[in-house]
Image (cartoon, rainbow, N blue to C red; front, top):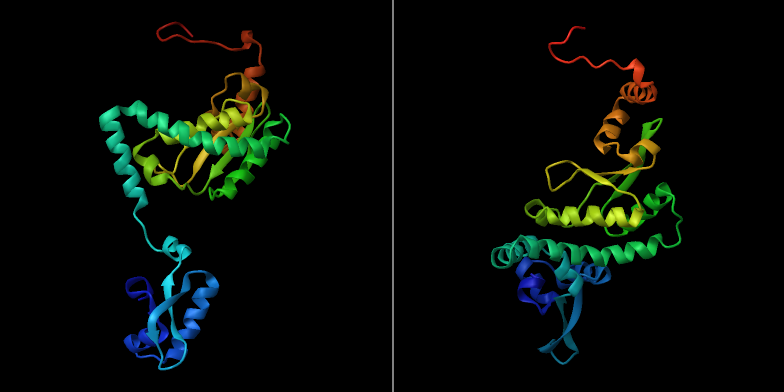
Length: 247
């Protein structure tokens, strides 16, 4: 009622809800304490000869807590941009927007050394401050090792679902921030339950080992061990059988 009829007094709310003004004021005081509503000078509204009745309006924080359709508006704007300026214009905007966050994250990582694991930890903390619900855990064994960086929430998921350029720009930023080539394996925008990025730390992974192989090995350690052992065998021990040739 405050958002619809404000400025509104406790007495007016009480009449509408069939409550006493005192009961309504207790609720309003709680909302004021939470910063969701604010007192407002009611001007001519007076109680007899006394002070003007205190009226209330929704505060800026209160408006922010109410529902808004910003995601749909953003998608409409980007559709218009893509239609009139082309997909590259959307990609350029995604990179520009990501660059702002990248600068802040770079500042957070400035005191961290070159070790990828330490930089991932610092990045996780920075992402957490931006409500990405980020976590990290080591994956793989032997030479096939890395860190799985997960983001359980994405503030721009609705936009990124239609415009993957936002995910691509973020992945590129992660590579620059961490100093290694990372690989995005899953995204919330793509329908997965979490955004997953593989950060290589082992020798084989750094050379050219696909991140997907490392993550698969993390869920099946025996397969990882076999792969590592196979890569260490002399080439003379590996037999290639062509189709149709005698075995």
